[in-house]
Image (cartoon, rainbow over all chains, first blue to last red; front, side):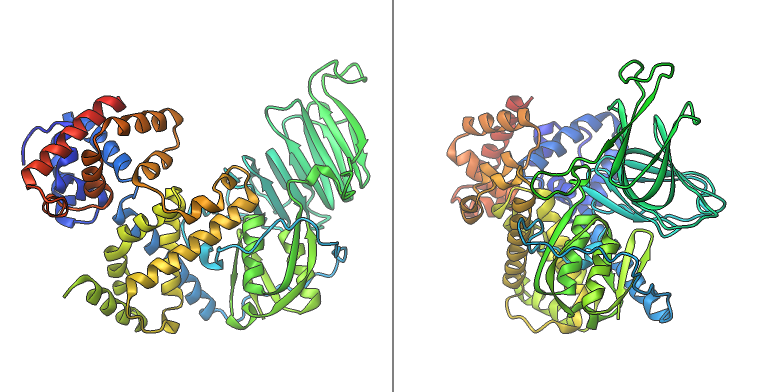
Length: 366
Length: 183
């Protein structure tokens, strides 16, 4: 091959085009070697590559794409294998403590029939980057990225749904003697009750100590307030810098902590706490604080496999099936639930099945 | 063996559980499927994801697959259905994407529309749109055949009834002009 090309020559070279598309092993090998041997022409090669990508409408590289498919299939086969090996995997019984499932009048249909398939969960797409939540990991960070919602089951069984561009860091030793984590952004928590292991959410301006309960926290770095909205149970909100300044929050109330001095009535401290009622939506009378999370799921005689797809897309957690028969169970009704676990529990009430929650994955079985 | 016969053979092997045959079929049809998808919607990421999912599904249900005479046609139909489902879903959940009206989905996108729309950068989109207008209809057609359809010079020349040398020169000059205009 030549030692020098112009950008135009590269773009017009059929073999270079094939190298960029990845559909000719020989061209790939030759050009990979050539590019390595001519580092001075990196820029030209890059420009030619970009021009080709523009002109072929980003059709991509078949080798790279096939790699993604192969990874997805490997993961899927592995899971199938591990399910076959462990027929006695622990299956959570239906937890009956949440009976508040409201069957509401069908209004807006938030989730329509989608072409998403449950096995989407196994494809290494940008939708669900794998992160493993283990109690032994020193520090675990969970990010929602661009996903509208991302649901994670923590090692203690608590369910957290992160809003987009939010992140959660589990502090070292989470679920050993304490359960402490820090939040940037917004998240909805449904915390399991463990008296011996207090659950504490650290934010920029406030700490929230929890006893088994359901609440939403807004703690964006760009906002002056940290807002904690409580739905059930009890939480104690204290100022980060003055932990003796604290309020005990009752259900349907929210605490707003401002860390800009002088904005609030109380003087003396830089940060202040305000307690307000939750803001009900004028139409639905539901708290606007969790508008981002609420999912009205209307189901009309649909198989569980289709419902699982809807739940998976809405809550941002993988849902898969351990056996085929369950997939065809059919349900009808309208549900409104704050977490994916509750939505599944609501379904269990009308026709029982089991499910197992595991980190970032839910597996449904008979 | 021609491509269709080869695909049918891979299909039969896939039904018997041959994973390699799935990847061979993927290699043989990937660009056809992506191009087909891009004519439906210029969301290149969505199209590529759907192609991957389509093959994932084939693997998932390979034991239940029926014999198919026209494998490529079968794949096109499945991809089209999957894309339309997803677009319908997105238009219900995202105002931004709902700009893709039903008409746009129904009509096949032209090459120029596709290459402009897949770009996310507004400045590049405008530049590209203007640059394409500077090309002659002949240049545009040859560029589409070569880069979008992935043909060789021999094939481009045969399709457009001209010599290979003329085809090369036409494309070279068009690339030279585009490169200047896109700078």
